[in-house]
Length: 121
Picture 1 (tube, rainbow, N blue to C red):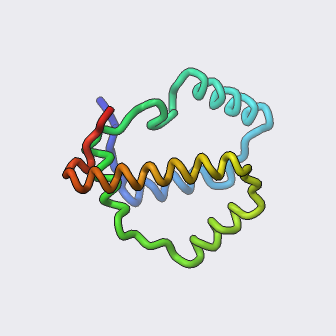
Picture 2: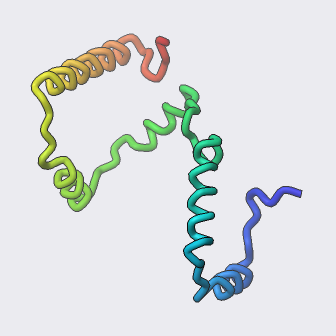
């Protein structure tokens, strides 16, 4: 029997929460858990979507879901702070600029030809 997608009742969740409150782990237990987690990463378990690829249709849906989304002022400030102090070489800046120009150029031509969302690969 698979429990994937099973929803616990609120009462059950409360009981499980109460049972775990105040519980502490010994340093030995914490070390064993840490090693197990590291090994599970190495054995390709619990990696989520890593190494997989979205279909073109799914990429299009993801893109459309973000269209028109506005970042809040706080969010923009956090991004700005995170990027401050980055030293980017002139070579890297040129590469980024060229890549951005190419992306805009291909996007425009794909819109004109009605091939937006199609893969050329």
